[in-house]
Length: 234
Image (cartoon, rainbow, N blue to C red; front, side, top):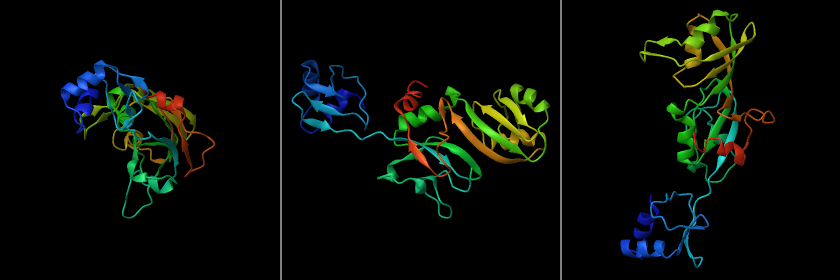
């Protein structure tokens, strides 16, 4: 919401009063005097008068990385399975949501927040944020996969060609795969093109945020300021 609209929506101010407050420099937004009524006010913004009277304290934005274990659902609630929120020992967990998802049998990096704008930047398809996975397969990985994945595969169900993906074969049945999109069961379907079953899938990173190697499955930590900022303009 715009700052001028935020002020005029308060019972004590009308539009004219809001304009006067801004023009006279009597409003602080996140600690700074703001005269621009077009400034954006979110639920995390602190809005106060110049005399210190708080008009909106602002919620605390929260950002976490979780090492998701296999067998835990990427959801905020589920009737049968344990969810990723069940792994968090945090107050007001109902305010949190997932910035992306992982399948039930996929482990690795999962981002959790209460900041909807930030999570949209993480998951926005046009941002093409790289997601890196460690893949284990039932059969040896054919070298031809490297070129085919880089060229893109046709998915008939969606009638589209996948974006170029980078495959690095690490061992006969293990590879590092970098995707720039998130299609339904994409990794399994890509290897399925070569009749090779994926038996293990682990996400290592999303954008510039890498899974902390100190986190055991089921553990989590708060994101650093630098990690949060890495999606500030994605």
